[in-house]
Image (cartoon, rainbow, N blue to C red; front, side):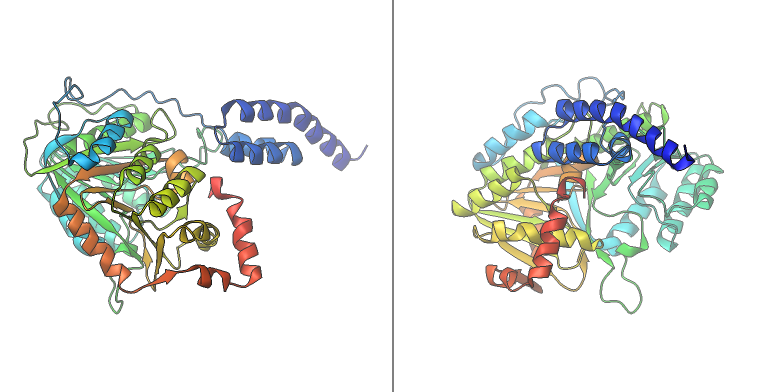
Length: 468
């Protein structure tokens, strides 16, 4: 018997044992029939490598052990928070799915691109006296990251407790030099699933996609910006390579950011962050009603998905959405179509060219379903818009790290904020209208004009939507 034949027989033997086990796991654990069917085919039809692929990418092994970090009593009934009467059903959806309560007395400022956000974030780092917590999906090794690393090193040198958390897969660009330089001054750096631990990784398909900065537990930043020069306008350019929006937050809602960061940090390192350095008493500083929503492939799965569905079904006059990627499930598609057909003006803004072209291809395969129902779809040219925004009836805003795709709703750890504020909604509308003014509207005619080969390619990529 040749070595090749022996190897083949061994692999087939493993397949005979592993494939049935994997298929049983798929049938018992996958909620979406479409995803379950595709995994079933992969596991059954691809000898040995199908079950192994499922083992590394298809199984969610997250066992969330982090305890709730909010101070005793913070999650108790804080009294009825008043919201616009038309949005009362949406408030009830949030109360049902979210861990945190709505809190009043917040101030939220919109910051466009790294040009506005990074100086404000660096100023917060430089003024911190007790603690700094940062989680970023990407922390590139470039001039912007070096400015942040320098500010964090200086903060650690003056006695500030500095904790930097990056995603082990997304932050490949963060070099070891930046890690060593920060740790040498007393700061701590950790990866949310470390690189190089292939067999010990709880799932190679899970990501911490959150973007949070908290200074002294009092000042917070969140939105869509990573720590990267791609979000900053460079000399000679009209706009950044990746245009995005971030938000500066003050008031009781900052505790939601701090608690989410503390949970992630404990899960990654085992260290518990507590006490007034991380959770000080917060006083009202504005008039925005808001709450944070943490979502991920653990006990929080589906929260942002449920809240967005609630927003689409609550809307009476207008819904505005922006996302760099549009890979919706049938529930989101049907909610958008139903809202539009009932007389709600639904607008969706996407980039014409995403940073991953296959995401564009899959998105275009879905567009005819919403355009046909009257949804206004606009594609922004020439820049890549990376913002993730939702506005309902000019009174409710949701922003954060979550895209309109299956990965964000079911696989990634994400963090968004919902806010009830006409003033903030108006500011977000101004931001969206800036891009709509130079965007091209997608129509049924323009979709039909695409070559058959392009439509076939898009439809083929769409088959892999649950995994993009």
